[in-house]
Image 1 (cartoon, rainbow, N blue to C red):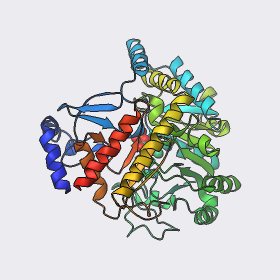
Image 2: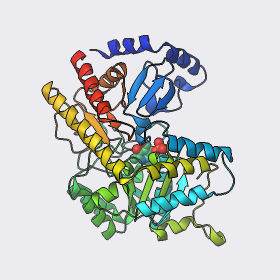
Image 3: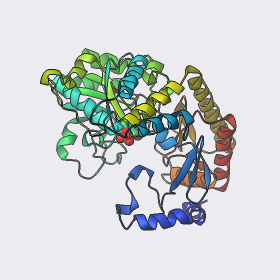
Length: 441
Ligand SMILES: Cc1ncc(COP(=O)(O)O)c(C=O)c1O
């Protein structure tokens, strides 16, 4: 089935969203404040969520495998988190002073993540990676950073490089060229960002060693999350750890997404200790959040005592009490049993989809770890950004729109996640919906 036909079906079911979007375009460019969630002809407008489900303003119910881009690990409106937010809000939304909630969340995170000796809070994953990069430069006195082709780390200039580069501009696979990921990024940025190929340890080592004297940090999403949840090959993260330690390059794990795969995140799951870690999404219980932390001697640059802080890190809403309280309630609800349950749901979903694709003889594959998964429309062996590009570039969006019409919300590129509010029947419902979409495609 064509995208046009899926879009017409979608429009027929979402007249209120269409009307809201018509109002929105008069006051916002494209009616939009969040590029990621926009799709043509217009996004549906959310009315409410409960558990594993989300309802739009037209009353259409969908199973939510997007989870606000993997943030809602307990599902929508979990009672313990709602209660924590209500109680905190009743005492005041924000103050020009810290609260006990902040101390509690910092204690929980540093207990769960041994490499995170100290931590600071911000309002987004973007701010977290921006500050981690800054402190790495301050600590090492070097100015370049390295990142992987296909990796997303937020929207500041230093990381909006080679996120989804056009391969015509991106150079060779082993030595990718930095490509600006947005208009408005100055050419000077590209001179300070070194791009590496995911899962190619020899090529990475060569480049890291060549650039070592000017490299402050290597920024790594251990699962290449938004880049398609492509897990590291055995030994890959260990090799990156070894090379960076040897050459005095700080290793930053960006666990904004991957933190959800174990109580201590991907670094616990893979047994590799970074120097710094950035967090976001699930640690705010659905509210805006970011955090960055790690080795105490590196983080000491932020210590303002006695006026000695070398980095000033302000932020009107940093560590606001609502977010901190929601984060504490969420992490307290995430018991080892919950992680086991999430892993089982993820495994059931991946094997269900894989069996379906095989039965229907479709050139698709499913990658993932724990509760995270990504659908890929290629027959190539999945290793990195380049190998995971869809053979038919229109297929991910067709599947996304088809699933919307079959009562399932995914992300447009095929990334998804299970939440602790889901049951096996929900996961099986996803597979049935995908079958419906593929049969009509
Ligand atoms: C790995 C990673 N880092 C950073 C970010 C940016 O986080 P935020 O959207 O909160 O700025 C994201 C967002 O998806 C992410 O996946």
